[in-house]
Structures are given as structure tokens and as C-alpha cells.
Amino acid sequence: MPKKILVIDDDPNIADYLTTIFENNGYEVCSANDVNTGYEVAKAEKPDLVTLDLEMPTEWGPRFYRKLSQDDELKNIPVIVISALSGNQYAIQKAAATITKPFDRDELMKIVKDVLME
Amino acid sequence: MFKDILFGTSASPAGDYAARVAFELAGRFDAHLRLVHVLGVPSRGFSYLAEDVRTGEQVVIDDDYKAWVEEEIKTYYAKQLEKCNDYSIHVCVGHPHREILREARNSNPDLIVLGGPTEENEGSAYKKIVAGSTIQLVSKSALCPVLLVSRPAASFWGGISSVVFGADFSKASDAAFKFAKKVAASIPGCELHIFHAMDIGPVHTGLSLSQEEIEDKIREARKKIRHKYVANLEGFEKYSMEVWEGLPYVEIVKFAREKQADLIVMAYSTKDVDAENARLGSNMEQVIMRSTCPVISVNRKMAKN
Image (cartoon, rainbow over all chains, first blue to last red; front, side, top):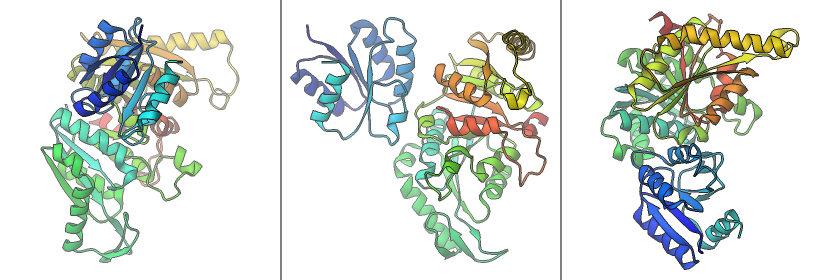
């Protein structure tokens, strides 16, 4: 059974690009364009990994992580931060990895496989 | 909650993280954002020559130069200003803390936002652990709360929904509590965590305490929190209270990280009465420099008000 990745990004181009890369690499993908929808999708889909943008309308990425980490069912899902903001590696202390946009797809897949321990 | 925010900026990378918070807060609270840039200190008294803080060059200060600097600021923050509906830019000359305080006296903002130190000794141990003089002096004398962002980690929260109030039971701390409560009460769903760190460092206690003594003191502090603060939380439900022992600034930073807090409110409680040479209390200073969220300083002048 393929592993499932939840992509949370308010930029549809980035979300589509990430979805395509992950699907081409054999993963099942679900996505959300804001924090609240992302949390609902995470509850419903129980993904194996979340990729998370930082700056989004209404709520920022760290708030999603706070909700996730306070939910007993979801708190152990690893999160990879994908953002263009400077200093992004400090945004979520317990994130599994941080990737700066624009990113290299091979580098991204290497990190994803590493986080998923494949 | 915030209708007028004064952002003291050097319009350089040192202020980028504070800018992120200032613009975000202004947008979220629909506030007027007042960008104040002090472009340099006159070489002497009323000299028309000053050293530009951004370029380091000696420049002739006149209206043309100020207009040029204002344009530079607009260019530097172009992306943020695109989304900012209500802002003004103020360029002035002088000592940064005096000019920021002067502008604050004139405009009476609800909040002053300042960034990390801008000293040239990038990467030095001094810069990593010591708050800059502007932070120190504005925090000491401002008549409104001062929000400080000294690390990139403190700039990613995008709003306020989990406030840690660092209690030290002083008069200024009472004012800080009132402010923290006001902030938490004004934001639907916001949590307020009342936290006291009991100092058990040998320097302060003079002798090592037994565990029983430590636990007695913790109980005492919890009782104080209940009487002094919780009793004043009429109807406010989303709160918690904790007392931890240790090195106060380390415990506050750890507690805020654990709670994934997006704001710390603390009292500026230095006993130094000389405004020009006053330093923040060492705990406040270290929390500012190490925290993973913005820190708001509330001083004794606010307690009097």
C-alpha cells in the first residue's frame, strides 16, 4: 500500500507541482490550501507525512503544527517545512526537515524518502 | 486590540524578522502601521552632517535626502507594503531610542515593535546574548508595550492565540498581567498561560535548597498566582498556571516552546533609575534574545498609568 503525503500550500502551482512529483514517485497525495482545511484533511486521511508551507492566508504553518502536535492521533506524523521565507529552518523546532523554495526535485525526494525511512 | 503600531526599523536585514511580525499584526488587527526610521546620528550637536546607519556614509541631511531614504524604505518593504492598507513612513535624524520615543509620544501608539540588535559585530558572542541599546532604552521609557523580535524563530507565528505571561509578582508584573489578559481576552479562543520561574541558582539563593524547600516555595508561588492573577480572570476559561524551578530565563523560554506560545508578556523590572544607562533585567533580556516567539515588555510607567 502506497504511503500517503498531505501537501499544505496556498499556492496552487506549488501544490500541483508537489502532488505531481509525489504521485510520480508512487505516493498517494492529498492536499489543502490553508491550515484549517489541512487539519481536517489530516484527521480524515491520517497521512504518513505532511509538507507544510509557512506563510498562508488567515493562519500560518506553525499553527497547523501546533494543532497536529496537540492531537494524540496525529502528533507523530512527520512534517517537512517547504517555504521561501528566510530563516525558515527555525520556524518549527520539531519539523523533520526544512526545504527552501525554489527546491530541487531530486533533493526533495531524497529528504522525503529519508523522513519516511525508505 | 491594536489600532496604531509603531515599527522602529533600520530597513535592513537586521529588522526583517521584526518587520514580518509588524506587518502581520497590522494586517490582522487592521491597524495603522507607522514605520519610523532614524537615518543617522548628527556628527555633532545641530550639524547637518550625519552618518547614515544603512550605508555608513557621511551625508548631508536635507529634505531631498530624507525623501530619498523614504523611497528606499518603500522599495525595501515593497512586497509587504503592497498588502498594507494603512501605513505612514517617518524619517528622522538623531539617536534612535530618543527619536522612537519622541515619535511614540507624538502619535501615542498601542504598541511599539522593534527588531534585534544591529551592531556591526555580526556573529560575536556579545550580539548573540545582549539586547541592543535601542531595545533597552525604548523598553525602559515607552508609555506603551514594546514588542521585541530578536530571532528568526520568533517571526513565524502569524498572529496571537497562545500567550505566556511570565509572572514575577512585581508592580510592573501586575501591569504586564493586565495587558496579557487584555490581549488574550480580545482574541477568540486565545489561551493564557501564567508562568512563574522560581530562581534556584546558587548566586541568588546563597545556598542550595533541599527538594522539600523547593517544593514548599513552588506551592507558595502557585498560591500567589491564584490570589494575584487567577482571581482576576473573571470568566476567562482558557488559562493554565505553572511554576517551574531553575534558571528563570531558561525555564520561561522552555515553557513557551513547550506550549508553542506565540507571545510572551513580561514586566520590565529593572531597579536602575537612570534612564540613559538602564539595562533590561537579565531575565527579560535573555528571554528576548532566546525566545521562539515575540516578547512584549511592559514597564513600570505603564504600571503607574
